[in-house]
Image (tube, rainbow, N blue to C red; front, side):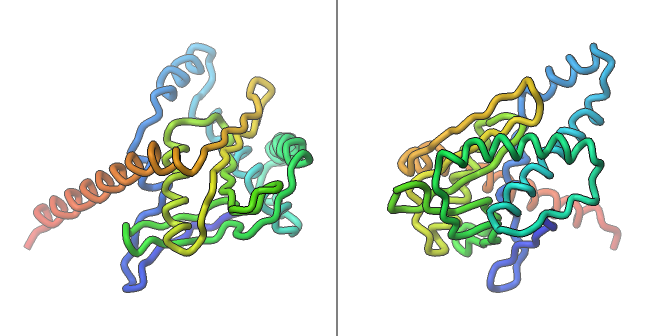
Length: 222
């Protein structure tokens, strides 16, 4: 599984990841969903932890497949691996109608300009397109934050010399009541509608961090 990555600039400074930055935005659907689960007598934390594990394993299986390496899922319960394999098969059904030539797979990158890092899932030549496509694998639905995430990754990639033509978010189902979703985003829309919200989130993330560090120092005894 993907280990935690610490992103550092060339001068050694630690910077946040794209995922960390976007965690400051709440998902409005979570509270009503938790309430519905509670009415059914289901522990929402346990339920979502299991779905998160299925998503993590699914993501891992896809990337191991693209890297042509054998996945080791021994650290997870068999029933979760079995469900994740169904998600993986959903991905394969999509891929058999496409040609993918990976250029980068889970490669950590850092922006020296904006001071953040990230690890895009897959940058590839897709089908007959001349330019590069950024693929992002999601389980559990597609939210507006995922479009901003694509914009953040595109910013990282282009600063590091990879010109991205478009992005595709693949919403991969984990359960029978979820559906496969393919959402393509043209480069012009990535820049116009995604980058500004992402950079505003980054600005807010840094402002909150600076505030917390300042108030922590004020509370420290002499």
